[in-house]
Length: 397
Image (tube, rainbow, N blue to C red; front, side, top):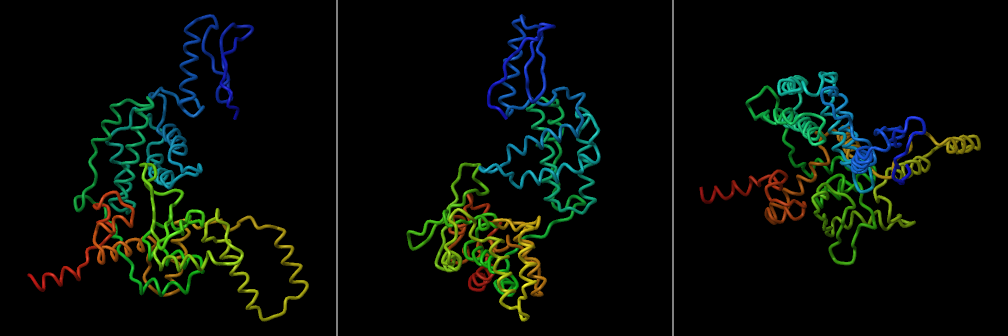
C-alpha cells in the first residue's frame, strides 16, 4: 500500500470533490464549498488514525451484530499482536467467545441486543458443559466487544451500560460446572514420560521443570537471548505475557537448567543464535537419521532414487522452526498415553516449580522466579506445603 496521503480531486463534469480511500471513490460535496474541504480533512484524519482504513459505518440502527463482530475482529488482529506482527492467543480466544453470539444473534440489529440476549448466550455456554470461569471469561470478552463499539460510536452507550450490569457466575450459585484445579505434576510422572518424547521436547520439559518458565517462553528460547557471562545465566524472552504492561522478563538459569541447554548449544555445527534452540525440524532430522542407522536391509539404488525424488517434491506440510504451547502440550499428552500415566500438561511444570521454590525459599522467592508483579498471583501457582503445616500443628497444635 502506498504511504502517500490521498488528495482531494475535482470531478470535471459535476464539479464535486472526491478522494480515493480504501481503493474506492469517496465523495465530499461541491469542490468550491469550504465545508467540503473541512469534511475531507476530518475524514482523512479519521482514516489515518484508524490505520489507513475507513472507520466502519456509524449507523447502529442499520448495523447487525455480525457486522459489529467482523469489525471488532479486524481491530483485534491489529491490536492484540506481538512486536513481530503475529497475533497473540487473545485473538483466538475472542473468536471462540463470539461463535455462540453469531449463531444466535448474528442478524440482530446492534441496538436491539441487550442483557436478556447476553443471558441467553451464557445459558448456551452452560448447556455446552463449559467451566464457570471459562464462561465468565467469554462473557467478559463479549461485553468488551460492545465497549469497543461504544468507543467507536457503533452502538449507543446504553447498550454497553446494560451489558455491564450482568453479574459474573459465582461458585456454587449457578448450573455451570467447576473446572478442575491445575495441580503441580510430580517428578515421577515427568520421569516416566521423558523416554517417550523426542530429545527436543524432553529438553523443553526438563528446562521448564527446573526454571518454572511458561511454555511460550521455553519454546521461543534462542542462543541470542541468553546471557552466559556469569555463574547464573539469564534468559530474556523476546516476547512474554506481560510485556504490554512495560515489564521486563528476566529468567535466571541455574546449573541444572544450564546442563539441559548445553546438550543443545554444544552440538556441531553450532546452532544459529537467531533461531529457536528447540526445533521440530531438528527432531525430524534426528528421527530420520536414527531410522536410517537402524535399517536392516541394504539401501538399493532404486531406494536412493525414490528418496531423491521425494525430497524434490517438498511435501506441503513442513515442520515449523519452533514448537508452540499447543504442539508441546499435544506431544506431552501423547507421551503420557504411551507411558501409561495420568495425563498432565506443561503448565503443571510451572506449578511444580513454584511449589518447590516456595517450600524451600518462601513465597517472595517464588514470586521473583516466576516473574509475577504481585505475590497474590504466585499464590495461584505455588501450592501450600501441607507437610510443613502438619508438622507445625503436630508440635504446636
